[in-house]
Image (cartoon, rainbow, N blue to C red; front, side, top):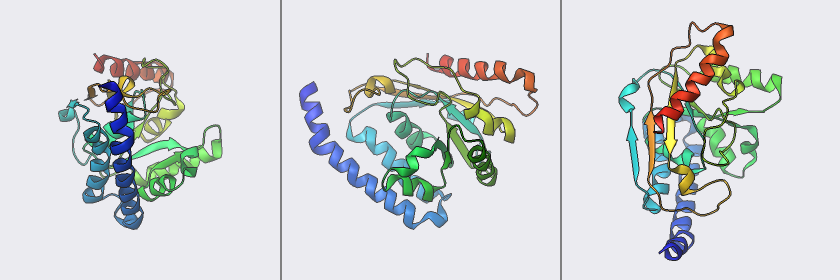
Length: 237
């Protein structure tokens, strides 16, 4: 069955997903003036969900009652594999912008679509660029528009949650927005960073309760970051 499943992926699922990716990217570029509209977000969400539909992967989600509509949040999630992106984009019911590595801007076609969608690119190790990214975030993160961050900075080597970097959370700290932990499980088993095919495995996303950091003192930041990391780990259980 594993062999048949892999053949199906390459001969049927992958070509169909590529076509849907092109449609989603073209729609995002053409209609970028409405980048914060629910109907355009719906197209993007359906594209993300199709990754799991095409691969027959079971998806479950809990904790959506913890977030309110028309409220801007900074969502922080553990990063197990590329499928994390599709799971969050498909099932997180808010308008949001990814905080993503500047290198992704260079990916043909996809980088153009991400820019058109208003996602925030961050150039690591460049202070001036980081300040510009913060200004961009200030312009868009209001009236219910949110952002999603992978504070580990890269995909996990073994599925475990790594250290959370302060830099990745700086936007939340500077803008004093509530932080919401997102716990992803099963994504590593579906596709880890060393594989180029998917494995059949259920995936789950748990949305935790918002954490207020508006009155957080500078000396308490390190402790708060570790508490956020622990909240993500607890949600995986």
